[in-house]
Image 1: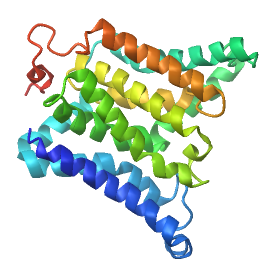
Image 2 (image 1 turned 45 degrees about the vertical axis):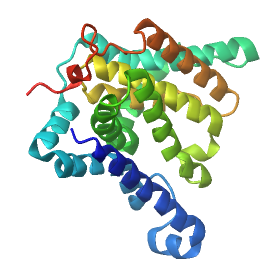
Image 3 (image 1 turned 90 degrees about the vertical axis):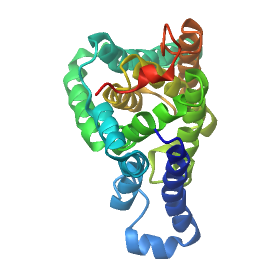
Image 4 (image 1 turned 120 degrees about the horizontal axis):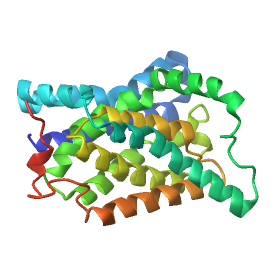
Length: 274
């Protein structure tokens, strides 16, 4: 993999997301008149959220040719992984988020999450499955951040450092969304959001490393976090701290390697087998 591609990738993803935001902030009347208000369902905003994945495939071919494109394609669609990683990606992430909610309920004497309301489960399941398709974040971002960026970061940094740096880049990339009332992030706590996203990235990298770079678990983790994490109000602190503790435990248990190269410690172990 050509490591120069990661710099270009970060620049392009930021140029589109932050550039579009700058247009709406500097010229609100003109941009709103031509493109509509900033909401998650605005087509141009939807497309911008997809730019991490779009640029990943473009740059994989531009910098690494057909082999790079094939590598990213294989990572994105690899589904034959051990079942327990699927469970960690879905139930595990949901459990962390619910754990944070229960801790908050115990400490702040707030109502606990209604997980025992079995009558509501069918509607919640349908909502969750539909959002896997409708929510642009998981599919629009993770083939880029996890499929393209992470392997290239691992060529230069150890897994823990690579994950924290990638998490910081990913978290800060979201910041313009906090400036627009039509975006979900506008009601969130910025600081706790940034911490939660960095911690989440460490967990996602851990799963990716142990599934030979598979992106589908990352998509599922992103989806589960979006569905279950509470990042509004006081709940944000508990969520960020629980995710951070989980990330720290994973880093400590794997000696900062996240399972990469258990014997050799070589990042080449992460490469796709053709």
